Amino acid sequence: MKEIKPIIKKQIEALIFVADKPLYPQEIAKILEITVEEVEYILQELKKEYEERGINLYKINGAYEFATSPDTASALWRYVSRKRERLSKAALEALAIIYYHQPITKAEIETIRGAKVDSVLGMLLEKRLVKIVGRKETIGRPFLYGIGDEFYRYFFIEDDEELRR
Image (cartoon, rainbow, N blue to C red; front, side):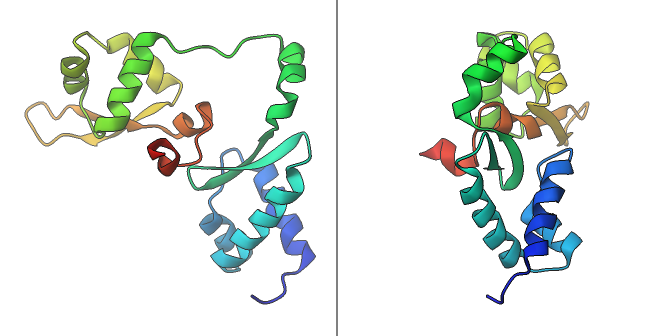
C-alpha cells in the first residue's frame, strides 16, 4: 500500500466526528477520492489509537462511528442520571421474530408471537430498531418489516456474524 498522508487520517477522523450517522468506508473513500483499502487501513489505525481513550471508534454493521468507551459508563450514567429505556418482553420477542424472519409482515409477526403487535411495532419503528423494507406482493400489499439502523447500535453488535457466534 502506498504511503498515506497524515492529513487524510485527520480528514477521516473529522468526517466520522461530524457525521450524523455511522459512515461506511466506501462513503469515506468516495468523499476523499482514495481507495476503500486505504480507508480501511486508516480506520484500523484510528481504532487502535482510540482504544485507550474515553471515546472509541466502533465498527457497527460495517459502518464507523465514535462512541464512549465502556470503561466510562459509570461516570457517564451518573452525569446523565437517566436510565436507558429498556425494551419490554413483548418488544424483544417481536424484535427477535423480525430479525430471524425478515422481511416479514405484521400479520406474520402476530401469527408467530400469538398476540397483537400494533403498539410494540409502532414503538420499534419510532426507535428505528425496525424499519419498513417494502411491501409484500399480495392482496392489500402489507408492509414488510426488517431490522432498522439503530438495532446494531442499541445492542452494540458489530455485524450479523457476531449474532451467529
